Length: 551
Image 1 (cartoon, helix red, strand yellow):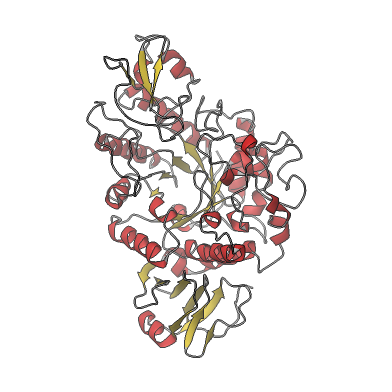
Image 2 (cartoon, rainbow, N blue to C red; image 1 turned 60 degrees about the vertical axis):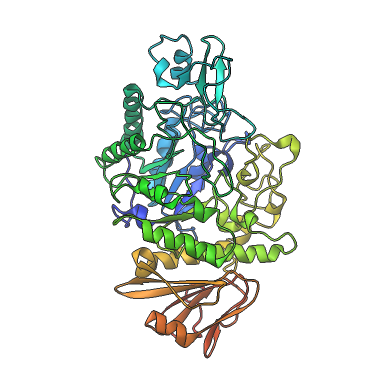
């Protein structure tokens, strides 16, 4: 079992920068147009291990398990193997060892809500009503008129109802997502024992933790009646299958106890809840359920200082003692932030917004998760109708990584599984590698500064009051120093008086960097001035007009 060479220690998940890799789209090693595990291994030097690396500390791998690919790997047919399209278990071990040699932790996706309908468990379960595996899934008799047992809906609108009738046995089975993804019955002790074995299989192999898919809905109520649709997402009525919350939290506590038997392991949950009180409950008492939970209220916030300020303030106020925040703005299920916040008539301003978002993400108190390609400013790729493959329209944010300007963008020598974006000719790693003013250059500098700054590494968070309404500002403080971030989300320049800022900070602010690579000087004598969609990083001491020390 390999273990990572890293100076971050047991709390690496608090202090590190993590990076999500969608294996199908990161790097193809054999020319079949699909990314794979050997391809990821070949690209690890981009992430860490060399002087010009990005400098991240961990990777989250989306599913690479054997799967019919009805939901591109989230329909798992075997939790303890690798799909041949991605490689072998030996390839995984080599990836894990190579990552650990570079100080990169590896977390893998755990998909406990459902399996593939081709999983051996479900093939047995649907064979007959009295099969020993029958109760491993959620089955129900039709109503008197033959309709499904209730009105629960799939998460995917195109799928419709969350129930499909199994003609052979005359019962409906539950599926929160596609018909090929039957939901497991977590009241069955056999299911629980099987997943404990799955967790230990990967932990014993050396993985550093898990991202838990659909962590907020895994355990369904024993009774299939009485669910009232709620407004989970603001403005959207949620008719998905609900969770039995007490039993769900008990399950997460049991998994936390299992993880704690191993050194330096963690779990981060996909908790797609917008009620902040319910959301933070998945941390338990702070140290007995999830280590981290993805904050989707932050990911889906509109481009406004007040929106981000309020989400962070709520998170900071409600988190239990000892718990740690985390933040992300993009993933495989949501349009990339640079595309969500884009302005159709001003692509250059979209780039400025992406740079401002990078500064915010990498300076807030909490663990930042980056999505592959975010570090070069990749946008959602255009998908012609004949190339659409995803049931939920998520293809644009999953287009192949853009490594260079070649025909295959350095991703493949074959025909890519999704089209490579035309922007790859100019937006790619190779074009930005030696340019300190590029998006990649900004990410490298921010990550390097974050690692070197005690305040950003693990310091506290304090918002700065009295700023212009379009400006979000905060201080990160440690015993050995403090750093302030000023972020202008508005479409007009703002001026922050130096004396007011320094009175709030308790120190004389010195310029570190701006998100605007063309800025000649950060401020006038009496104020810090920010252009639209510009962010400044300021630290205690130093000279107001000092050059960026990381350039």
